[in-house]
Length: 284
Image (tube, rainbow, N blue to C red; front, side):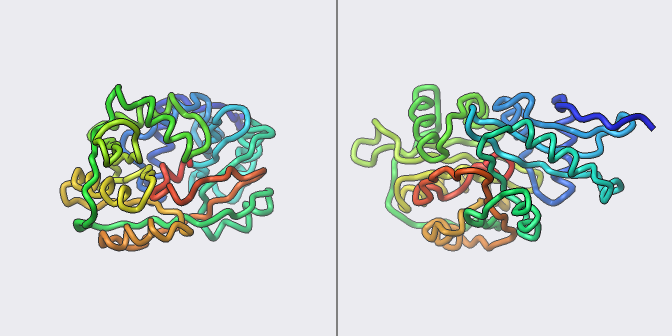
């Protein structure tokens, strides 16, 4: 038997990792991989046994101080042999001294804690067919070239790290829609929130959904949900954000899954009051 090899994944191999995530029930977006790779072309790693992918992990960097871990999957027929742990160690070594975040399944929280990760909060995935939500009208506009700089600045305020290469693709989702909310007094000028909806393996996913106030988040949610055309959708909400949970429930969505948001190292000071939907469980 040849020695196991750990190396970055090629784009077709990243597509395979996304297929594995779908098999695990994580319902990835149909076109997520290209945006993920744009953020960090070497951020997906795999352990290969006899030339075949045996385990995968994403260890995506956001500059020199922060990284996010996801896609941690071992092929079912090879589990229990230490392959995932070997790849985990290699991935963490790649991230170095950065603070590392992850959204892990709750029953693995104790294992992550043994690796130095500390619980920050939980995220709840709400899903279903959205019903209309009422609220104050807010001017909305599809994100175009004229708005991208403002959206990027707003995204950084919410996410805490720059990710322009990622946003270059995420804000132009294939078959999806990116909407910005504009100052209600003028219908133009500064943006007061934005959101993205994109097709997933099953239905649609909203993420992120960032807004100054619940009324703005509600208007953005309604505009994005309309794009789903009555098909099921999901949105991943920080559990401590009561207004976000209330919005999802008002739209008729119900909890279907949750994750433990954990960090190794100093946790970023996220403005949870602005976060009505996180971008993705895979990249934060």
